[in-house]
Image 1 (cartoon, rainbow, N blue to C red):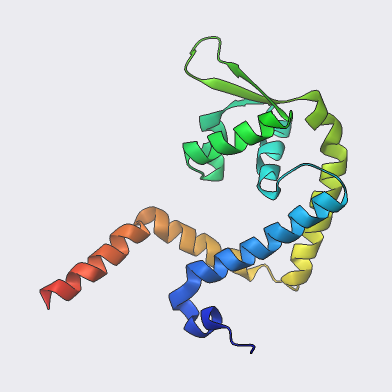
Image 2: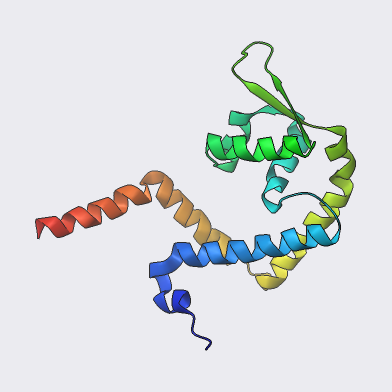
Length: 164
């Protein structure tokens, strides 16, 4: 049986469809890392890239440009530090703030990781058939959700039904 219920639902299952695509890609990247004996998670590359560019950042300064919640960045940073890819220390001026930087282990791995990321980018372009139009749609969706949250949108729709 080759029935795809999520695809059949169309826009009604947009979140599930995007998650499924993301999960497939992450699974395959994780599988490739394992084949190369690299103990890295797919979602760490953004933190690697930010810290490569900025040398040292606070958790908040990592979360903001990624649009991630503070707790999710804390979880990623902790896992990366546990694997000795990140060094975490208290900020000298604000002891509540944690400053994060790459370890020597991470810096030494960056050339290999960059080759992997470059190959991954090329594979993404293949999947997209070099048509980046989807990014315009995603920007539009992202912008609309920043202007009015999905929670508020569907709550308003739900409350309209009560008024009928």
